[in-house]
Length: 343
Ligand code: FDP
Image 1: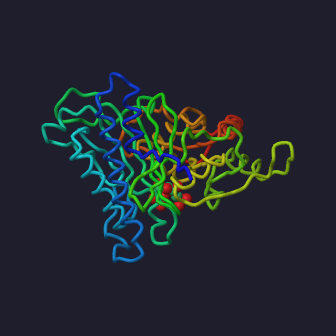
Image 2: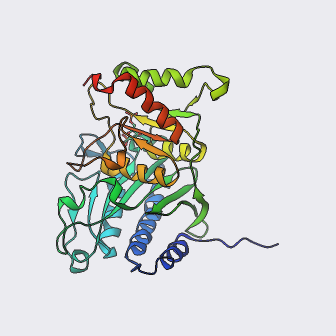
Image 3: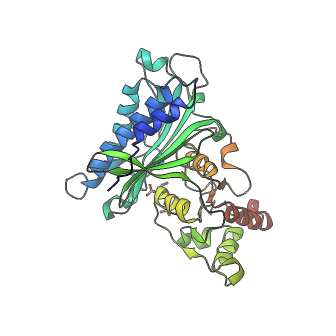
């Protein structure tokens, strides 16, 4: 029997690096460190039901939401990995009000910053539903020394790399770098390595899954409701009605739609004029990934990656997934005059 050669994440990163003659290895080192932290967080997520780590840690994050113990753990692990890597001069985390500037000399000379959502979908921790980590890597814009807020307030179109880890029925790390394909690696627990399992991921351009928390129907703009009605409509020529799937973990909903084709929506709504999801920690990295996979990400009227951030915890409405589905949603929004919404 001939066994296929397994390509580990580390091998893949090194191979990618060699294809760029000018690469210094710093980005590769950073990606490897994120992969390492992902394994540690995965270990804790997997035993969350066994040890006394479940439950609320007793304080709120900067957006006023409950912080659970695993969120804190994941935040600390990723910060530790990035702090010791020496390739990163600072991190902005969804779990922290302000950015964290690394002070060691090596870090001060490092050229990258990372924005991270250490544990996305945390309301699903207690019920054994998939959760994830989302990361985004930029080149700093400040000169060497202590990084500053402008290093993080960059448009998504300046991203160098982005990815996510999904802690699900299996654990996967999916990432892409500027100008590259999207590749997915599945953690083989028997060897403790992420192995290339989904090379060159591309999202079907015509999906038939829509993912939105419809319980907010009465708060949504009419244009969004009109699009939902369209998704439910009967029409054989467009393969409708589409299927509704909503896990409530952006990473898990996004990952399913990336593989099968679909659209994930978290729109503006009454009371939340910019929706719920964070531009820097969730929307930009996912938009970067989906575009590299041939999909599209929009706030309803403009490209997510072109939004100019003004604050770290800025939120934005998002329509992300299969290109044709996002374009169809945008048509409803133009017709439905989003500006007339609610908020
Ligand atoms: P969570 O609050 O559980 O961390 O932005 C966080 C997020 O989950 C996303 O992962 C998810 O898509 C969304 O919020 C779910 O929000 P709703 O409960 O309002 O649908």
